[in-house]
Image (cartoon, rainbow, N blue to C red; front, side):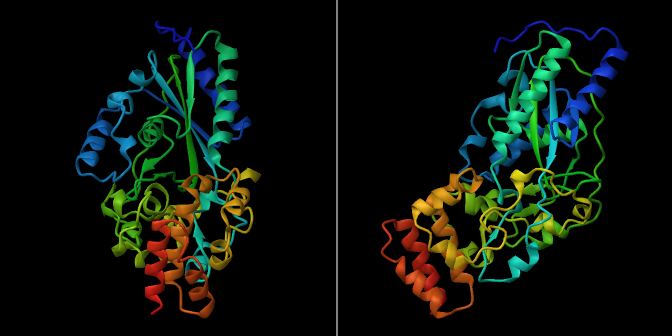
Amino acid sequence: MPIIACMREINTPLDGTKLLKDLTGWAEDFGFQQLGVSDIDLATAEAALSDWLTAQFHGEMDYMARHGVKRTQPDALIAGTVRVITVRMDYWPEQAAEPWAVLEDDQQGFISRYALGRDYHKLMRRRLAKLAEKLKGEVGEMSYRVFCDSAPVMEKALAEKSGIGWQGKHSNILNREHGSYFFLGEIYTDLPLPLTASTSEHCGSCVACIDICPTQAIVAPYKVDARRCISYLTIELKGAIPEEFRPMMGNRIYGCDDCQLVCPWNKFAQATVESDYLPRHGLDSPQLLDLFAWDEATFLSRLEGSPIRRIGYESWLRNIAVALGNAETNPNIVSALQSRLDYPSELVQEHVTWALAQHG
């Protein structure tokens, strides 16, 4: 899409204010619960990212260190960008099984609540594209690109600048009226929209998220060592899960929500209005043995359209093997693990062997 080099001006401040109000209304029409607009100065976030990378907290997520300044300087990623529109979409699946009850049942597997339904990426991008086209139809010529985890974008920093919320001590964005169970998406544009105000931080002295983290991945307020994080270990890490963390993972087989579940602000979380985010195939409280029995064809079929599918079948078996190793011993678990000892993957074999060792 061609980028307009010159920055146009909205005719008057009143026009800009009205356009922003209209844009907020259109965003709600397309299913977003909040919209904010920020400039592209991310110098503070750039320094924090540099320190985080230097500490090697990104682990094997090499993509976090790629792209140079494109991640922290939006106009380097998309030339001509002067504003970033950020939107929020709630995903909390109120109809899902109670999370703590699932976590306390070691025969079940816990899956992060954001991943119980369909993958949010496509839905968000489609809605963002419609919103951007609606805006373009109003203002005339305008250049834009939409993103939802699809490019090197500092979405949390942009959300913070635009007033969507503040970055909590667990590093997720928090909103006083809506907690943290929401997805973010962005529109980079050359249209000089009025800015929305940022909000202040309201974590205070609370350290509930730091205290509850099973692997103590929140090494300091606002600082997460991804190498210790269960979400990283079960999703991003492609190799063997370090043995020291396996017992701490409990029955968490895809992601971890503990820091959000314990956050006081999430008592204000709003239930999603999107049916795509509601649980499918009983993934809100699945039996570990049932999941472990899936062959690869079943894995691909049942998880079609799910974000879980992207980790692949090997990692799926790896994660469940660890959870079974942490479960209370019974003959069915031992038998299921033994049936996978000759699975043609050293990664799976290693974790199955470890799990069997936990059962003596």
